[in-house]
Image 1 (tube, rainbow, N blue to C red):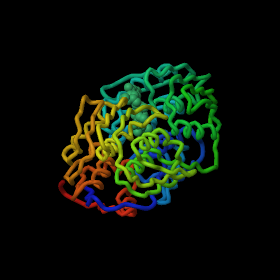
Image 2: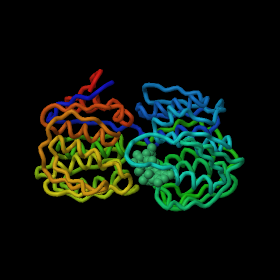
Image 3: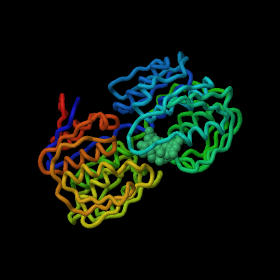
Image 4: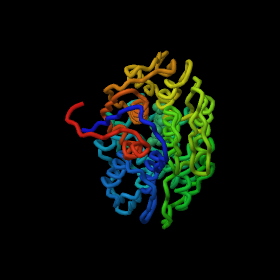
Length: 425
Ligand code: UD1
């Protein structure tokens, strides 16, 4: 077991490089099931969730190799298995991303209900509904789904609720379907565009990715493409570092990011009184002279403020003057971590599971806390960096799931943060 120990209040400055996007990597890896030959990815983040997805690929018979440089090679030519091991599936929610491609290639897949963050119920009803529109037959045996389709067929699916992974899964399922598929009210995240670009580069016919209507003209098969595929920058990591810079009022440059993916977040931070300069692939926080101001935040699907920014924004609000109202609209469990911030001295009132009011500024004090999920975990790291004294964070597997060697990268900015082996917490 490992924990992080942070001595707060150290001045931070310098440059931090953003890793490849976790969520895009988690979709492109299963997409290789549809692609002949070997695919080379670069800029793949060295995080636990990627490790699990590579293990899932290996478990079904794919050949996988990973280098320390962020290069990953995958060949799914030898894949034969269509049932996924439940001990891996229950580790990461994105394991559901194997459903679409296995179904498209083999006409069947068996998978346990996926695991991942405990931030709400996270059902698969939209996905199952969409797959049945594309001709799949679904049987459920306790918590395992057995899904089959002799041949997927095109169809029109209307999302009653926007879902990122369901949009991506249906895109994969429809790529080899007979006829045309139309996805209405689809997710518009940059990762959806990256997935469509990847499939189109291999011969798929997908139009409109990144807009609410995506059209997929089914093709018979995909073709090999020798060109390496670079994973796009992780906008959630970049935006989280922006919250860190604003909260600690530090001169920090966040490099290797795509500022156009961060516009609504930066607009909010600037309303609070933070200043950022933007370059083509970096942003720089310029320390503010006046205190930050409270703000109202409402999460929304892309291009709105991502639900993944909610936890860092709550921590930032503890440093702003006045009452901030923070409202989550997507997951019912995102805000429960705020009890940890209260233990650290934050003044937060939970109005209901979807809304908190934060009264700032507050002086945070170091405490022993457990990281409940990936985004709350990184927010608690920011809180620890702000706090007086020592903060100890347990269950850091949750943080390693999404942020590569975070203690080394933050230490390079001046943070006093160490990873320590421990038998107990
Ligand atoms: C993805 C991201 C996650 C981000 C979230 C919202 C990945 C690996 N993760 O998660 O970081 O926080 O988008 O931007 O890409 N829902 C249903 N039925 C379904 C599927 C989803 O009701 O079949 C609900 C969910 O419970 C949630 C909402 O739809 O309330 C949106 O979820 P979704 O967009 O699917 O989130 P994920 O794709 O799981």
